[in-house]
Image 1 (spheres, rainbow, N blue to C red):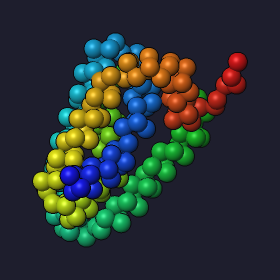
Image 2 (cartoon, helix red, strand yellow; image 1 turned 180 degrees about the horizontal axis):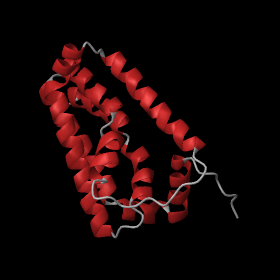
Image 3 (cartoon, one colour; image 1 turned 135 degrees about the vertical axis):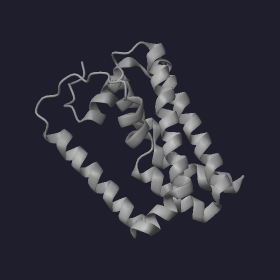
Image 4 (cartoon, one colour; image 1 turned 30 degrees about the horizontal axis):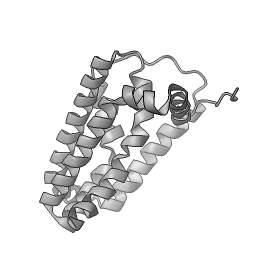
Length: 179
């Protein structure tokens, strides 16, 4: 059990499904609940496919290219910084169109399975082995799918107003004063 938790918790933090939820809601706000659940399934399946390939071949690819895990972290951090600065400097945002590939990019990767999660997988394989890493990965992606598939129910429980604030904060939009 301790090996599972040792593998599960870092992946849970790296995947950050609670942090992905506001972006998921913002990207899928024009979809009906059935389409939203289908998209959650596509995103989880994409994240699983990418992560399993990385689980099996990640260390080999890093070694072949001469990249260390720290290099990958720095590169991922720079990408996230560029996206954040671009979002902060954007003057006007057009409403997002729902694209058929939304479950793959940006939801499946890089939001669910981004650089942090991929690096964590490579590190966990060395620390706990393939089996525990795969089990914890499956548990985390199942949890991510469940949270995203039930985004409407979570919105009802948390409250639409709080979810709208979380979406606005996540997208870097100015906060309106409370009434």
